[in-house]
Each structure stands twice: as structure tokens, then as C-alpha cells.
Image 1: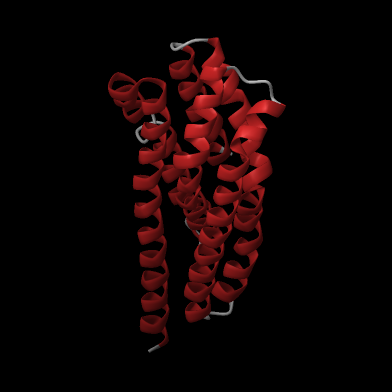
Image 2: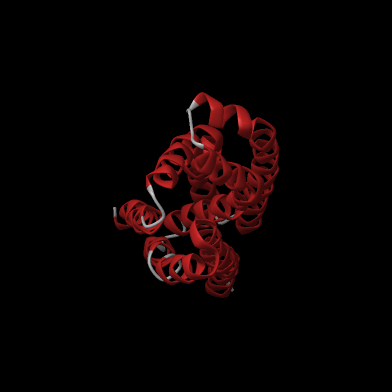
Length: 205
């Protein structure tokens, strides 16, 4: 529950930061918020689908398969995000027109499509890492990373980003915080698999 609450909290801080630059940018951010679930819904679903597979292999003590599942999920997420990001880049002007964005809003949406959308590779990685934590008996880790990303990994980054790059800096700051937390979360997920595997083999011997 805490893990799921963290995301809207982080989005609230971002919306507040963008609001300082005017209504046109808030409108563009609202469009981005509608586009994200449509374009990247697959990686949200992937985190739910990969969990039972990890849990089943964990229950069977097949730790090589757990590690392989984690790797394959990350690879699939990367390929999918790259494909969708390229598609979004090509259609960005059309999407802006469909939603009737102003010139400033269109520029912001184009910036998101060209430079920020690709960073959802790391969002997908964080979702997968959280799924592994939940199914390896360490749900508190997913809470830690999601809450941390929504607070420590968001607030200072968007604040500094806004000071340096304006509204575009807000988007970059949010993406940078996600990148950092995702890399650490994935490293921690692999480390957890190794730790659980060693513990099992030690107890078996």
C-alpha cells in the first residue's frame, strides 16, 4: 500500500513545481500524465506478471531461474520502452495537435517525447526490482525504494532542475532521480537473489 501511495505523492511535487511556470505547462504535463499509462502500460503489467514467476521459482529453490527471469524481464522492458519512445518521438507533433496544446505546451511535450520518455527504461527496471522484492519476502525493500524515489529521489532533483533549467529542468530532475534509484534497486535485487541462494545452499550443506 505504501509503495503504491508513493508514486502520486511524487507526481504531486512535480505538478506543483511545473505550476510555477504557468498554466500552459501544467496542461502539457496533464497530457503527459495521460499518455504515460497508454504508452508504457506494458511495463506496469510486466511487473505484475513477472512476480508470480519469480515467486514460483523461488519456492522451488530454482535460484538460477529467478535470476534469469529478472534478467529477461529487464531486457524485455528495455526493448519495449525503446520501441515506444521512438514511436512517441515520431508522433509527438500529432499528439500535441490532437490535445490542442499551445506553442509552449507543444515544446514541453516534444522535449518529453525526445529526451525523457526513453528514461522509462529505468522506471520499468524499478518496477521489476520491486516485484522481485515482494516475491522474495522483502516487501519492505520495494517500499523503501518507491518512497525514497518519490521523496529524496524527486524533491531535491526537481528543485535544482527548476533552478537550472526551468520547466524542462523539472522533467530532467525527475528522470535523473529515477535513474539513480532504479540502478541501485536492480543491483539490490540481484544481490538479494545471490544472498537467498547462498543461504539456501549453506543450510542444505
